[in-house]
Image 1 (cartoon, rainbow, N blue to C red):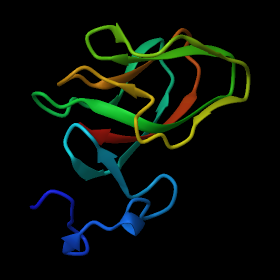
Image 2 (cartoon, rainbow, N blue to C red):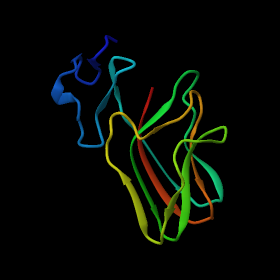
Image 3 (tube, one colour):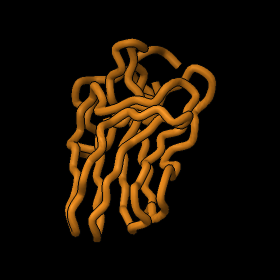
Length: 138
């Protein structure tokens, strides 16, 4: 497939293709690849102390870049995101009861795992916590 190719439309990408599907859909331009990559989505309900996998490792040399994020917890919890292998990739966030974290779309990414490592959320208590991420493999 040619660089900058829109696989769904069978033609080169145009500026209007950048946000196909709304603010959290479509394509993200990845400068280091000099190409557009279609975003992917993942969600889960975490409720255990420690790490819970959100997105599995994507293969040798591939990182997971989170470009948008939503987290909600019904009770107080502290959470952080980690690259598998016990590497913190965010600070610790203290959420009160019924509080949210919302990071809007950011094509440069809010966080990124190490190559060939899963994206995890780590909770300090076993509280039901909803997690939605929009991500791209880089």
